[in-house]
Length: 225
Image (cartoon, rainbow, N blue to C red; front, side):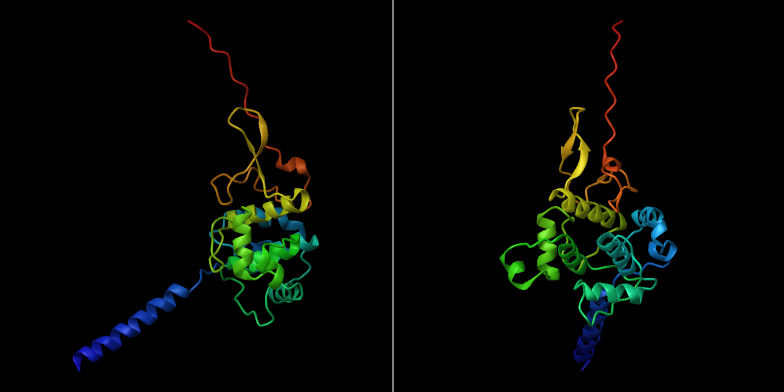
């Protein structure tokens, strides 16, 4: 009898732990709540870059602005409707605004926005959270993640940065100064430290010069004693 009671308590504890593990992070007063207007995009991006995780509301605002040039929706419900109409999220999608955004739906949105076709499975079924995520990881657009994980604010800003580069050049490259001192183009892995050269220069219609890496200082002559 006692063993059965212990087993029941253990089962309840396991369920509680499992449910707790499934809970997603929540962010109060996220970037889009503070800077919701199109004229505040740079302030929004600067705030988002410092945020621990990107929320559903943040991600929808940024991706709509990236796709359409501006986010005309004034509420989270309005952004959800826009995303559903674009095929980014399913019709029954009901995730909270302040919850950490899942990589899967953001990857689907990205593939639809920039026209990433993927492999045979994606070409047959269209972008799904699982395969769109795998494709973007393979293309070095996002760091190694599964479709259910999240991105930090900085990782998300870099993610949108790379989408802009795909639109312009077909490659998700980040500009970097080579060790030799000559400025050139080199691949920085998605999610790597210091992957953003200018945190305010995400491609929301900004000029290419905003992404130019600063030139390395010239070596100074060594004076012999």
